[in-house]
Image 1 (cartoon, rainbow, N blue to C red):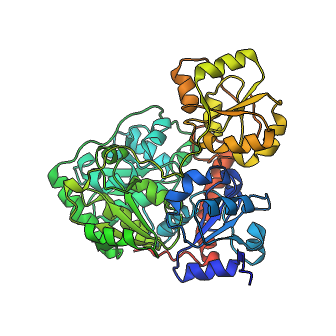
Image 2 (cartoon, one colour; image 1 turned 60 degrees about the horizontal axis):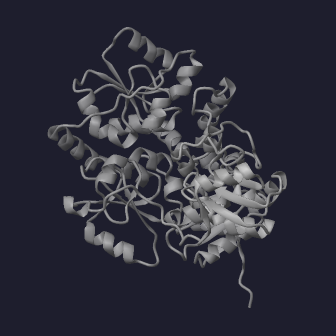
Image 3 (cartoon, one colour; image 1 turned 180 degrees about the horizontal axis):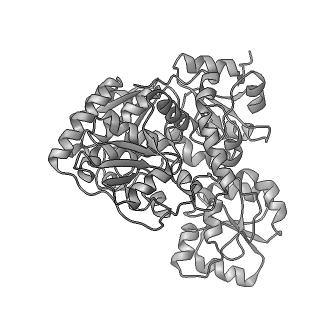
Length: 527
């Protein structure tokens, strides 16, 4: 008897409403994904499926439903998932169009669950905010004000509000008292657009800080739209906090977590959950990446709390899974958990952890399948071959990395688009594949061999090894064999987005509360 090979819109909707585990996976590249997708779709592009899926969908018998928009990516994705040991993956009936025709709501942009939740928070709590012109007037008059930037430090360095200090989201409740010890000091929280400033401001309000607190309305976008100038390349960061500050913040954060019905656990519970075969458990360390590298729990992933709340769909791609958060201060995990609980997740904070629990050292490395054994060459060999001719270099890095720097003559290629890309690249006697580290390029070697019938080699250590050898580099879009659809250009990043795009982005965010209501599957609530 043949088993049903698809799942319908109503299957997914019913599972979401029943709080069952659901992984709805969009295997297109990020740019088309950002044009239209269901609320809880996780974008795991076919191009890098093997490098991301183990961490994002850890349990191999998770109910996975895969879709595209007619590009022909679903069958290769299902075959790849089966080869990786996933036993319960099916196609979405009718793909994206089928979802639309069944009455399913479609959302644009990325990290939509978090952004729509942020709008819902402001809608319900009337989170205090000040317009860019008001904030500038306060700064110009040397008022008693501190500006705290809730984004990642690299985003803050690209562009920031004058006088702003980098305090990424989950750090705010822990650090704000130290940065504004006088309760009369006004605290202003900003991000690039809206979500992180709303959540950051409301975090401080929820935690009961005595200061006047406001979000910078519409963030750096609002600042630019008001015709004001941003700073660039700043490096002001939060410092250490006193024990007294930490204890006060801990008590505040625990109160907020309890109000949000965050669940509690201890180390032994974690061992039990991780041994369960019928439930997905994510273990996230919400401290800074530097703290994580100095020591963390085995099996934990580094997800600084502000980014985890902003990009939950990226880290926890199985909606309905269990999320376990850890820190070593009792503040950052509780505050992050308070938001995830309101976003409809079952979330636990681990209590009673001891310094010896944080025994693993080093950065987080994504679990990936056992790499193919392929023939590697050195940068010196590649250089010699290029001088002799008859070699084509294919670069599978992110297109933004390629534009910044690449091996002279290398063709930027999107793996999911490989066969048509190869038609644009002059035929060669041999091919050399690279990417930043060679992890992704290694996976593509057998595919290029099959399509060309020629010898294919991997540049050992990727383009990083070429750079380390001190060889010349090229910049710009010199040889694009594929369209640059691997990343959606956010209207709030960088400093050169057109005013119309920035305004359109804000208008879209304002409409998210109504769209959530039409969708009806979110399960969000606001304390």
